[in-house]
Image (cartoon, rainbow, N blue to C red; front, side, top):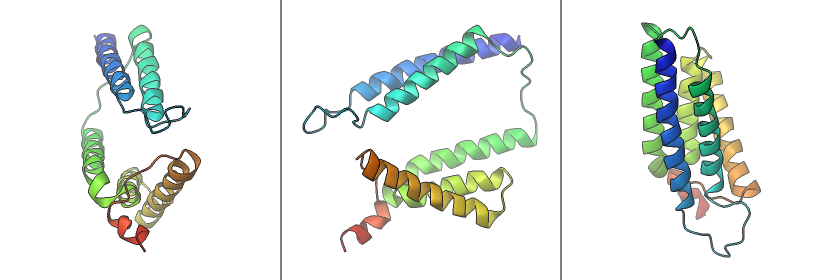
Length: 151
């Protein structure tokens, strides 16, 4: 029965991957139109990875996958709530502060000391922001930090 759970989950994730990939193709073409890397590139890569992972689950399910119990369920619920809050705060707060809070909280929940967890979140936010902004030339929301941009 547990293998059937993996297969059903794999089918659902494959449907999500196809929908997500199709959604990425609906982004407007950037000005100039001939860029190799555009705003749809990262979502397309994620869709491919999700599709391949889904196929793996469907054709090679785990023979002994037990459902988590007790505290593990609580931690999973907290992780989902943190990720939902991250998506809701991304635009108003901006990428760096939202990432600091999300990554820091998730690291802390996984056992890191709070100061180290939130320093990791801050470093991750800044590094990924710089990578996307300067290496990939893709804009991420600045949110409250946009005040600093105007100075």
